[in-house]
Length: 427
Image (tube, rainbow, N blue to C red; front, top):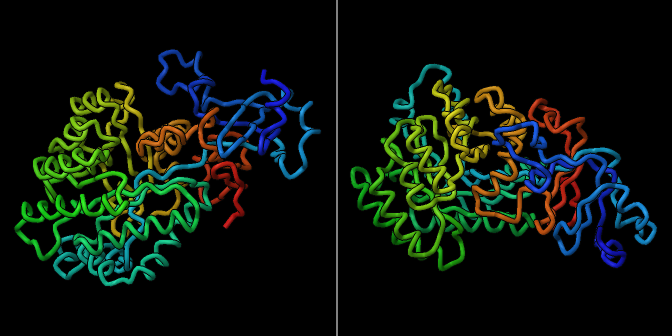
């Protein structure tokens, strides 16, 4: 029990709350061998939260704070009347900054066109690269802002945004600058990721090694400009091999930047083993991931980020190895992968439902994957859980139980979001 002076000095108090904390301090243990000893969601019923200086300063039973409430003015108290509080949602793998639109390709594929047909006509990633290069920074911001707002309306309080549709220094800089500007305008945490090793631009046709040299030269420049929080690549037979990605990772290591990787989406060429070798934050997609590489991820504490939106859009049939990931206790995060070609998805709630229906994850797993494990995938130890000392980034939901967030489709039960201890007007 805290003393009187502490209990009457919070900046804000949330009362009459049910809380899905996702904190091990409150029994959250999704991989416990004895589930009777774990507390689903780390949930606390009929609880209250004290907030100070943008952080969660106290969590306890409602009756512990009741006697102190008369000391607070009404505007410092939020009575949520039995509604649920979760950590603010975190979308840990997105490409939301891009120019143009590829719905024409969506139509063409439905009418029988192959990816090869579309690419031969200048479509695919080349179309997005052309549109992104041509867009002014103002136009790129305006297009991308709509996608960020859609995500925030569903409880997202932190987001990762990748470059990778520029594939030249000026456009990669433009994309990362827009990502920073979005974070500043909406006062939301944005983790920026350098993904110039995403695809081979047309001007480097048949010269992948030469292009990777450029990628490695641009990285220190953009890092010096304060635009890069992490480094990513696309390690696939249709993109870059492990030795090319290793070259990029070595530059990242020299700059003390964390790494992550698009791996094992289409084939298994050892991408996850590589990112584990560099003690990377995450390996993402993973449909073709081997158990040997899962063990390496477990040893390096690398998060598995699964992306059901891309699986759905591409009508894939190869499921990620969920059971093996569980067996080796690899944290599983889940994300929209919002991008113009393979996952034009701006709903993390729908992503959670897809994670359950397509990948057979539990509602607790997908919500953990959108909070505490998504935070881990971005290296954000102070976010993703409701715990004393963590950022007071919270989402308020009008639901009967946490599983409702994965169960419902199309009905958004959000009631409010708090970022750094301040409630936001819903946008």
